[in-house]
Amino acid sequence: MRPENHPFSAINPDFILDTIESRGFRVDARILELNSYENRVFQIGIENGEPIIAKFYRPDRWSQNQVQEEHDFLLELASNEISVVAPIRLEGTTQFKAGKFIVALFKRRGGRTPLIESESSREILGRTLSQIHNIGAKKPFAYRPSINVDDYGKSSRRWLLEAEFIPIHLKKKYEKVSNILINRIEEKFARHEFKNIRIHADCHLGNILWREQRPHFVDFDDSRNGPAVQDLWMFLSGNLSEKSRQMSDIIRGYTDFRDFNLGEVTLIESLRALRIMRHSAWIGKRWGDPAFPKAFPFFNTEKYWVEHLHQLSEQIETIEEPSISLDI
Image (tube, rainbow, N blue to C red; front, side):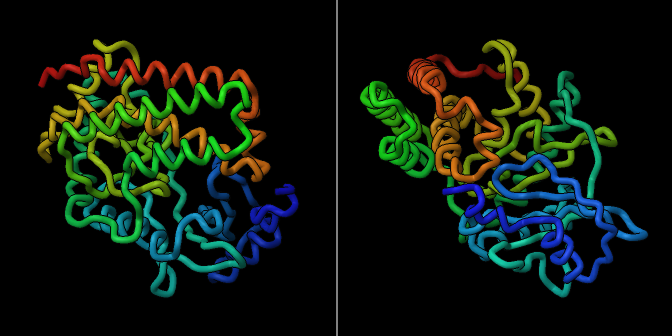
């Protein structure tokens, strides 16, 4: 797809300002594009008021019902005094259409990226996540999907094999390695029971603002049904001993408000493998969006796919290695 034909090419300053003014705001023409690839997100200056954040959803990714489930989850969390950035409700709704786009508006929230290097900060993080999950466990999403091997693994593998990104001389190896990996993941999932609840699903430091000694969660765009541990494992780093200490701190805080199924810890490397596979397919599917070649210039290179295959091969081994040990 040529850049000028991509749906996001319709978003220009006049379109943005007209969209915001159509909701009753008086804008002062200040527009700052924020760091978002999947959607387009802007900070808009408002006359005699605080700036607001406007999110233009990627066309055809989520239905209006799915977007509404994201918004309703955020509003439910906010009504229970949980630190999230919920959409603004205008004229009884939190979403509206502007051309091809579903649009939502949010209040601007400041904060810094957390370091969570201390035991206390990790425990605080765990407590907040457990409160989110207490709400998330009340009912599942009806329209949004669930994290599973078919969607994250098999579908990603199939798409990449049919696309033209993997170099021809590496395709057979990718087919073999990815097939072995998916089989190992399925075996691991079959051996361990877990409950799917509404979760953030893309929970990493880039989606947290830290202020007033607590985390504030943003960007629930990828929210779906999944195991609770999906919202915990991406905060881990370092060797196995360091990850064990970090996870112990998070779960220690988590269990102040909610029980945690310790068996889910054995799923971490399988979930990591699924995320790795899905991430590559995600970039490939978005390659026609000019933002993606700029953000991921290394993707369409042989070096990328050699390293990707190495990652997948490592995950095959890691999945079978001893999992994190907890001291709680």
